[in-house]
Length: 45
Image (cartoon, rainbow, N blue to C red; front, side, top):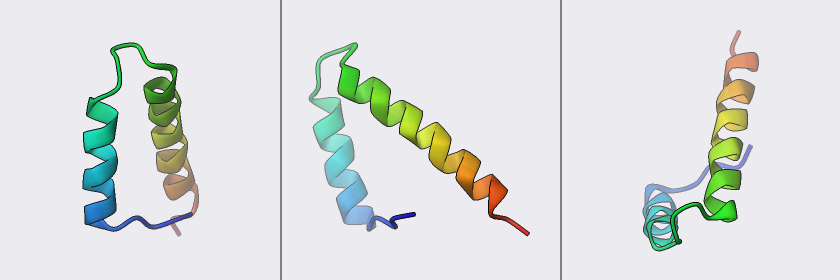
């Protein structure tokens, strides 16, 4: 998994906030966040 700096995450959050409501990109990013959380859970000892 890629680790993003806090600054990069803040920039991404600002860009995401500017997208129109119901944006396909926002939905995809939400799905990606779920997948990242699932991967983290699977990789814990």
